[in-house]
Amino acid sequence: MSVKKVKITTDSTVDFTPEIVEKYDITVMPLYIVTDEGEYRDTLDITPDDVYAYYDKCGKTATSSACNLDAYSQKFKELTDEGYAVVHIGLSSELSSSFNNARMAAMEFEDVYVVDSLNLSTGIGLLVLKAAEMASEGMEAKEIAEKGDKKRRAYHDYYANSGWGVAESYDLCINSSRLGIEGSVEIIHRFIESRK
Image: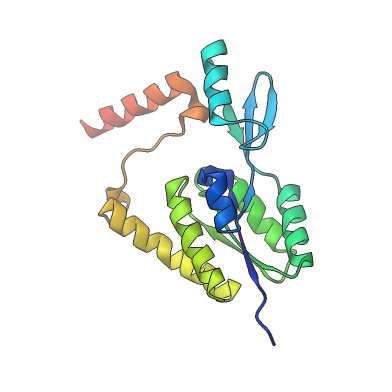
């Protein structure tokens, strides 16, 4: 039995340039950017410059919305119909429902594997590039996904100089887009007060 060619997919929060996406043949699933003016597909309908211009114009920050289950299902179907096995390395499940949507969509397919990066941006990017390298070397999708889970821990330990999963080694992280400035300030204030 021949090994299926592997397609690596990821979420737009990977922040890759179009050149990197093309060079490594990566499929990027857009999350949504939401403003008072509408909802836009990240990197396709709106750019970071557009988001900054919106803030300058309105004084408001844009929010984000997860890639939905249907979008993942459609993309995974398209790729598997083309004969690919798929490894999707997604935005952290701690930050968005995108990972869970991708995981549920993958259940419809035999050869789609979903890896929770537990990261965003560069953290996802490192995992995606390593997966693309393994795919180009002919490694099977399941093995790439398993190695991605192991790499995530190794990258964290190296770059954070602390143990993966050890609560004492994490700093306070806040998703200010959901809480707003005042809510974020309140959380930080309560955290500082609890440390006295």
